Length: 250
View (cartoon, rainbow, N blue to C red):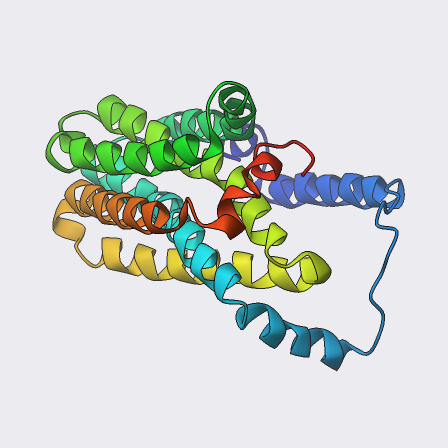
């Protein structure tokens, strides 16, 4: 958007967003639903199905395991502008470039997971992802404030690990509630967004040393998720579904 503002007024931003919206609307019209069985009924019944999903202990436990990791991504996004512009003194233009680099790394997360799953057990990939988050935080806390590029590199690796974990996490969660896929998806995203919003408030509340606070948060989340995953990774309801989590048919 900063590049756009250099060649046009603020109105150009909304023109571009309108064009993107029209393109998205066109693509939606070309989409054909592949779901063969649909659950009908009134809207209230759909809301009540959430209670059924949340009462599933297997789903609930795994949701805590995989909903905590996005805290790191959301807290990084929420505090990045303060860290780069106020902390490192970068211009808005430089911030947009370095933040775009982090976003580009994150986009490769699903592809990286697919490659890793060809040769590594899914349990090991998930545990490794949590440990990468914790290790990244352990390095960001003492060293992240030394250089904007050092911080960007460590944050990129940690946040990409979060994206990598989304694929097996979503698959394993949906395997626990096959008859209510739509109802199961809602609390997955809700929990991630709400916990992420809370994490942003925690990080920005300590404006004196944002990088250290962010790093410590990464460590706490990574270690906590790794412990929770170790407790559940060999349980039958997980072990029997890791093939599906690898992106292959169950």
